[in-house]
Image (cartoon, rainbow, N blue to C red):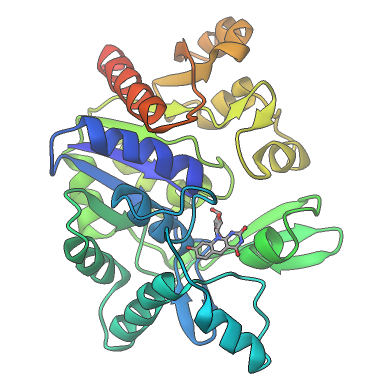
Length: 311
Ligand code: FO1
């Protein structure tokens, strides 16, 4: 079993590469749920859905989130009814949120709901929410404190980030499937997702770091920062705002003690020695995924690197 930890669009791309190059039923993706939220009475799990749609070949190729070939009739009607529609939910995507909310209301856990989706979509990978308890990322900015989607989508992540709170994280426990996947892992891959708000919440679930230490498997991460810039989203500014260096080295410092190796882009090759000085192995490669072939190539290189890192 290969276990990947992933958040939004960048993480989903590498997860898809892993899914394509691994035999069926040998990939588990543990996904961030701290940017889940309630909208129009529905439970939205953006990162779970982004990974699920991407692996199922259903993702919108332009945005990376949402469903391909969308229509927006429901959103237009909601707008006529006076609802705010800054969070764009298409008609096909809406079905996922309706079903998830219905099943949760009937008493299913988020883990069970996700399993129903993946089975229905014919996915031969296991997708697991990081936990079943509600955890919500709150972002402190000079303009006030915002729920994650309010900060990210409504305000277009323009605010400086001064602090992050993971509300509810104290109650979050490892689920049995997450524990079992980590115990069976031959390698763990931390995808190039935001280390603070995508991977950070996963690692903050009680028992997660211990389970990662206990697995005898190599743990490798892929840097989401290339040439000092985030490949997508506000990770570079967020790192700087929270006192981290926005660089591959800064990512290495955050993950040091947890990972055995870091994959960095050739643009950052000069940081190799400094990262190795932290006790990490380094793979320098083309870490930017422009198309599906890049996703497969980076997945293969990362898996080979993980085998080299095996303790
Ligand atoms: N991101 C946006 O920037 N704008 C949107 O309107 C938006 C809608 C949306 C709907 C469903 C979904 O699953 C994701 C959606 N996202 C949208 C992406 C998402 O909110 C962020 O990429 C993640 O939360 C960050 O990891």
